[in-house]
Length: 189
Image 1 (cartoon, rainbow, N blue to C red):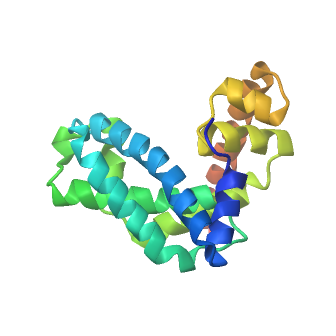
Image 2 (image 1 turned 30 degrees about the vertical axis):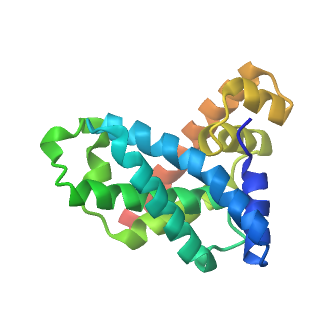
Image 3 (image 1 turned 90 degrees about the vertical axis):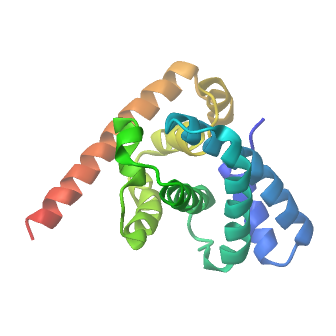
């Protein structure tokens, strides 16, 4: 079974405390997740998945080198995802991925972006999720952040599969509405 956010975060905290075995275990667990992420993304961009292993190593190195920047008060998964995403974007840019060759639903991944905006977004996710009721938040964390199946999430959250699906759907809708409200408030300033 895939490690949970809590397990990964505990390993990161132990790693930050100097536990070398916890650090190795964390990187081992993250490597599997990163490999799956990169293979899926590369294939989605019409690329060969052979570069996935190089990207995994680059991301693991960045995680290792930048672990001092991790804020223990925040969830670990968005921080890791931000690093993984930067490495993917760098790879696509370096290999001259053009908007013409990228499926439209993935185009924004390749477009030039201000890096600090994406980093802030990862941490804003935690703040947005904290506004949701606990069951919704937990369902979204399990399915969307931890990558659990609906069945695994149901077991982890002690809910039915239907309740997981409903909570994820309603929670994502509530998050989208909150983001829209915040955008409109910023535009009206």
